[in-house]
Image (tube, rainbow, N blue to C red; front, side, top):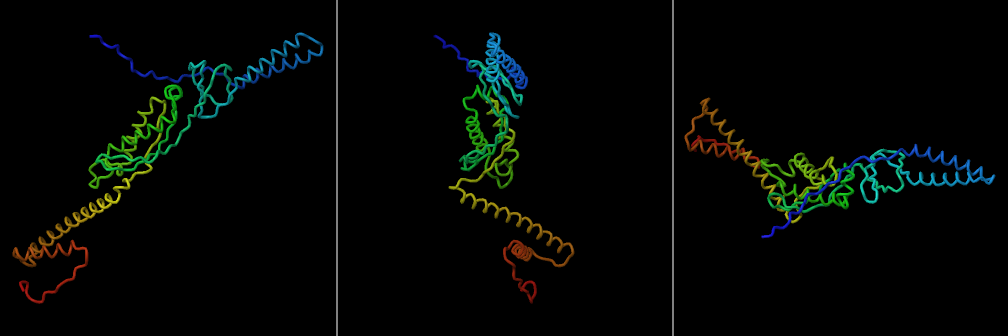
Length: 300
């Protein structure tokens, strides 16, 4: 039996390192000195001096060489340096900078980017379709990974945000009226923390980190929104009546105990049951009760 050779599937990640660049202000001085020699050589040309022509030529070449290497860099900006496609390092220094003219350079913004995802339709933990959208603040931390390990890191961020939102949206139920589970609607901080951790793990290969994230839109999908609203209303009514009945039962027990303790009246089982029924109607009814005055005895 012939065994197939094993394939190395490990991904070699790039790593940012510092590039060897110079201050542009120092090179301005060099260009100024070269320009001075050029002017001196130009003054010698009126005497038909060979030295003057040589000085002018050298000065022109020097100024042109120096001028081709200047570039400006703003705060929170970096420049990746390459030589014939090979990564040479990244310059994070700000201001006027200078680099050898044959080195290619590509600028990358290190500033925070704010992105709001599209509204996505996701099935939550219970299978209910919901609409969800997230706001994410991200920034580049490793320019080498962002430029050389990912084809288009901005498009990569958009796709990974969508994937992470779908993953977190399917991990929890939208709502839990009994407050016994972690839900998307009731636990914003915990769910947001998990979403950030999920995004950081997904974007690590692109040299990108996430500073802040959270949901900007969270609702049931339109096809079930009406039914879920009626369900929530029904659950709210049941919970309210349960609380009302529990309170009414406690008040009835207290009333009967006080009547028996103080000997106000002695009730047999039948009248005791009738009194309990009347008290429960009074305490649990949604409308005001109309009292009936009994002018006879208790048993008439």
